[in-house]
Image (cartoon, rainbow, N blue to C red; front, side):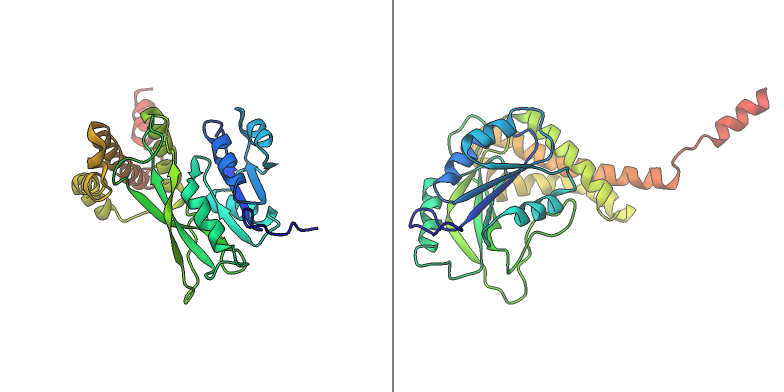
Length: 278
C-alpha cells in the first residue's frame, strides 16, 4: 500500500545517480530523509563505499550501467513510486530552510505549480555553507513527472518545461559541495569536456578560433564578476580562472576534432619515403 502523506514527509520521491560518490552521499540522504518518503539511488558501478553508505543511510539502491546523464536520470524516474520527484546530485545537500519550504508546498495536498526551480548554491571546499553572495544555478529539480521528465540525451540533463507550463522558484538554497579540491575539479571538467566534444555537434572552425583567441577573458569575467567568485577572495580568483580554462579546453578539443576528422592518420608521405629508400 502506498504510504499516506504526513505534514513532515509528503508522498515525494528523491532520486540520486551515483558513481564513486562516497564523499557526500550520506549527508545528501540524511537531509532528504527529513522530507521524502522514498529515496532512490541509481549507481552505475561504484568501486568505493558509495553503495554501502547509501544503503546504511536508508536509500533503496539499484544498479544500472551508465547510458549517459539524461537516460540515467530517466531510468531513475521510472523506479520511483511517487509522481512528485526531487532530483539531487550526489554532492547536493538540502538546507533546513529548503526542507521547510518544500514541506509547506505539500501541506495542503499538492504544490500549486507542476514544477519548481531550486537554487543550487556553491559551497567552497572546507566551508560548511555558502560564502557571502555565493553564486547559484536555478534549475528545475522538484517536479511532477506526469508533466515533464529529463531528456533522453547523453550530456544534457536539464528539464525543459513544456510550453505554457508555469514554473515556480523556491527561495531557500540547496548546498552544492561540488568539489573537495582543485584536483577533483580539474579531473571532472577534463572528463566532461571530452564527453561534450564527443557527443555534441561539431562547431564551425572559424567560431572555435574566435572563441580560443578571445573567449578566455569573457568567461573569466562571467565567473569572477557575474557569478561573484570575487567574494571568495584568492580562492575565488583561482576557481574563476579554472572555469575559464575549462571553456577554453572544450573549444580546444573541438578544434582538435576538426584536425582528426580531416586526416585521422597522415602517414602516407612517411610510408612512401620509407619505400623509396628501400
